[in-house]
Length: 97
Image 1 (cartoon, rainbow, N blue to C red):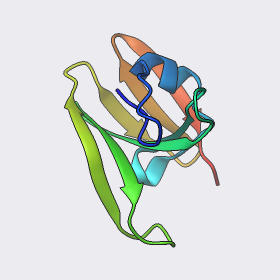
Image 2: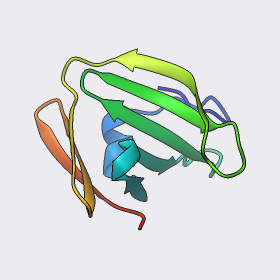
Image 3: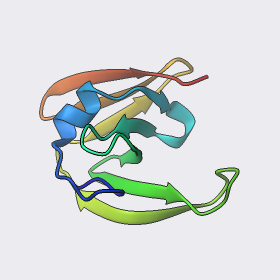
């Protein structure tokens, strides 16, 4: 995967391990690129990962910048965490709210 801002390459497992927070209802995490210190929204669906960006100031409309098929992704949400399973590992990313 590549940062939306500086195009630096990053590993999905690294992004999941270093995510600052999530929005479970959107199945999205916030990952800050260590190269440019800018954030990336990464959305998860079963078997798919998307880098997305807001096209409105209030975050009500989103555009997919890149999408990737990933057969090992599974996602579950609850009120406090986004749960992502990737390559047999479970990641719990705390909700921003």
